[in-house]
Amino acid sequence: MSYYTQHKSSGIKVWFVLGEDSAGDPPTLAVCQEWANYHGVDPSMVFLDNDINGPWQTTWSFMENYAQGSIGLPWEAVLKGKDMEYLFQTQGHEKDPEGVLNALLDL
Image 1 (cartoon, rainbow, N blue to C red):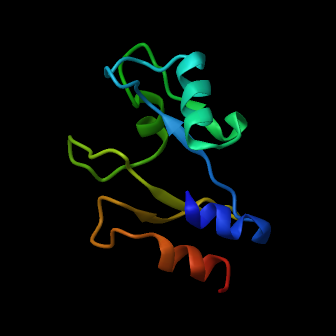
Image 2 (cartoon, helix red, strand yellow; image 1 turned 135 degrees about the vertical axis):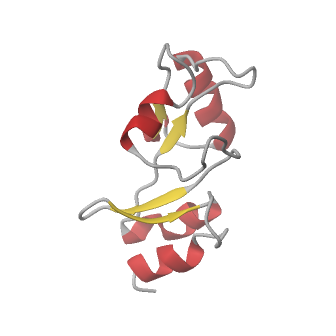
C-alpha cells in the first residue's frame, strides 16, 4: 500500500480483489466498504469475487495463480496495463514486487 501511495502520481493503478471475508464466506458490499475504509483506499479500487461456487472462483477462472491447489493470502500480482502481461505473483521465488514495479515505472 505504501508503494502505491508513494508512486500514485506516476500513473500506477492498483486494484484489490476480495475473494472472501474473515470467516471465509463470499464478501459483501458492506465488507468491501469496511475493508476500503480500514485501509484508506477508494472503494472503487476494490473488487469483489463473490462467486456462489466459492471464494476466488471468478478470479482464478481468468488468472492463473500457480498455487497448485492452495494459496497464501494476501496474494499479490503485477500485470502490465498496456497488454495485461503477467509479470509477478507472490507464489514465485521473488516475494517483493518492488523491483518489477520500479522497472514498469522506469525508476
